[in-house]
Image: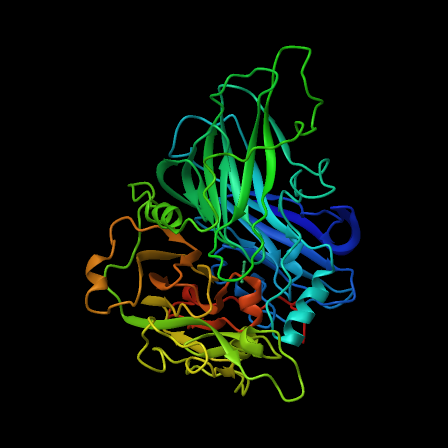
Length: 555
Ligand code: C2O
């Protein structure tokens, strides 16, 4: 195999958007960060140097990290953070994975600006057609005019929801619908009559997004670096943490005015005031005519029309239908290894919660209380030594325990939850679910519909899972498994659990180590919507975690 080496310097840089100039945490000064591109089977070494005063870590979102949990990145789960002036080399091999993933900081809210694409080129030709002319990332993000560190701190201090971002971005650019932003617009020149592969990544902190391109359909061919049965759609829905590869065929007439808007805006219900702004960019057809009406790389003149195929903010039927259309390829070359039987089922409520405001404080959460979030009413607290280290060294840790409740603490009924009297008092702690190597595990995620206006994008580290079922209302342990798709369910690392509904995942727990499972809405992770997951080593040495690298940061 080949080793591919990259140098990441975590440093501040000055960035201006919406006429606000500020210091932004970056990798190598870039916002968004550099793209990593490797081949299937490569050994990857990313040498990360922290050149700022605060701690940091980097996570390779979706990379399986087979036996190399030390390189996964979430702070206090698999490693202690990289301190000021320190260097740590993330060393891992990309095994049996191909497609688009991404990387991001996994410390506090640093991923607001510290993120980029992680592309794995396949060793064999794409299983879809037609051949692609070229490919490029489309990464959604969020921009705050204020310092993100301050937004995060205030949220935790006052217990309310965070300030919404000031703009959504495409490849770091908000586009001309935001004030003072016309020149910060993503414009991609394309040739007519070709097929392009768009590597779409949702790196936004707190919002699921719809995305569409005016006058063009999109054909989904891959999700979370797993090929799918191609299906053509007018728009996509993508949650934070997810990636989606789509084909776009430039089938419009290439006259000199041919600019087509691409647009992303949130998918949620508007029980609360949420930011429903839209980021746009453009596809510009190359023309042969000399007198192009527009200057290169300038957006067209306003007014801008949104693609009429962009779903409205609350379009749950579109989102549901889109998710239901995703299917694993399940071919001979790319079989679907969904467990047909299970050894264990764990049912988890995922919930927002309210706690009484500490005496003498004002809290900005609902009804003057403080927001928390939980899984089975456990609100996750990070330990001070990484769980992976405690686990590996067999330290009798008092900081975490393996007694995570495997069903909800009460019979859960999502209808008629009274936000004031029910579902309030979470337990705070560091509990993990621990399973033997090779366990065929089913996890049913049940949204409690409590103060929740959107799907929870639940992300599992170290494993892909198969989404064998989804539905609205309460999961029924007798009826619902009868409807599971055990033939070609979508395989991913992040699932959108429908609001007021459930999703059933099946996992082959074949990656020994300690893994983080959490909501990829950053505010929910901060509030504790997270848990640890330990897969014990197997009997063979090849089924065990590798020893820690010598430069693993100490706590
Ligand atoms: Cu994309 Cu735990 O992260």
